[in-house]
Length: 251
Image 1 (tube, one colour):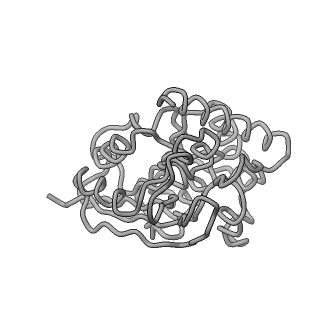
Image 2: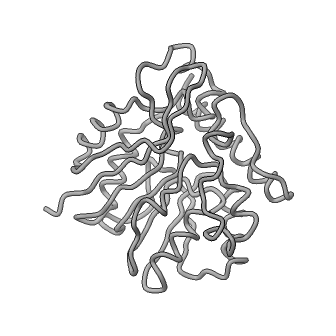
Image 3: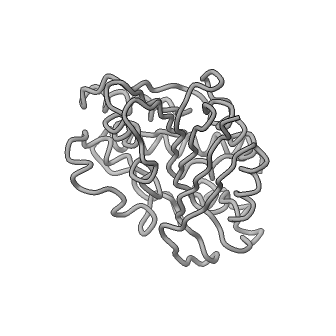
């Protein structure tokens, strides 16, 4: 199973989800262990948080956590959401950083970008910009972002080491990495790793907890932590929805 094949399958799956949402449906489940199925993605956001958002942004939420609540965003900060989908976390971040801040969303799927931009228009939010690109090659300059968030997307990448290097590059000194992701405790069977459906559904591509920490340290991060937010058992073993934190050194 090659990286290009996985990337194309992920793009097609989330493109189809965006089209379903545009037609008034929820993003729907993509298979066993999928990130957009209960219990992974249910009840992640407080009703008060989503009350002012366009319905399309809420319906398109296919994540495994609520990184905007956990990242402790501050007025005036610049935030980047890796794999921003329908834009729910970007729009929530834009509110938290205020008019003096900015929230970027990066996605590789045209349908999701179109949906996100429409949700931005409906929300009337101006301090937001959605960018087309891949999380392995972030189209922003070095040291241009205060906080990187992501919601159940990094595990979909075949080259997670490159994703973390890019995250480190675009963060300013002292910048924060604060993502929700699917993390494995223990080994994932080879049969699961080779399943395209489970890769697109987040399980097969998920990193083991210690490996995630090691790759962050390799990229240059410090103050690394993995905090389980949901632990659930599937046929493949123990999978966690987790909040992964790290910081780029000041020097």
